[in-house]
Length: 135
Ligand code: HEC
Image (cartoon, rainbow, N blue to C red; front, top):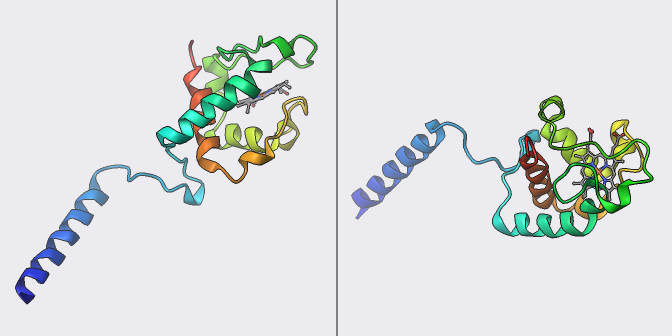
């Protein structure tokens, strides 16, 4: 009996070590590492984008939503690869949570305080912003 427990323990350790060596371990969102959102967070983010963000940013992220007309500066074209390359994931998540003024941008980019407690949804919105690249 004790031998079996021993075996299980050894296998568990080997499995753990193998997982650790397999490249990137799934991120837990600690230490500033980006979170990988699950399907539920992705669905919630889509809902939020199509009800809040699209009004300024447009459904395709081109900055041509119905509410963008009177804005100066205009919401930028999120599909631009050069812009995508110039910002970090952290920057995108910060502007979504705390608004433009938190990152030295236009205060017309509103904060979303309700999302501060939902890091996975913020991560999913960031993924969505990233997916506009090159579209
Ligand atoms: C009321 C209009 C408005 C809404 C709603 C809005 N934004 Fe913005 N957003 C802006 C404007 C204007 C800027 C440009 C700020 C600047 O360049 O100074 C911007 C900028 C951004 C940027 C680019 C930041 C950068 O560094 O250039 C991202 C990413 C972004 N918004 C994401 C979102 C997301 C995601 C949502 C929905 C949760 C959202 N925005 C809702 C107006 C809006």
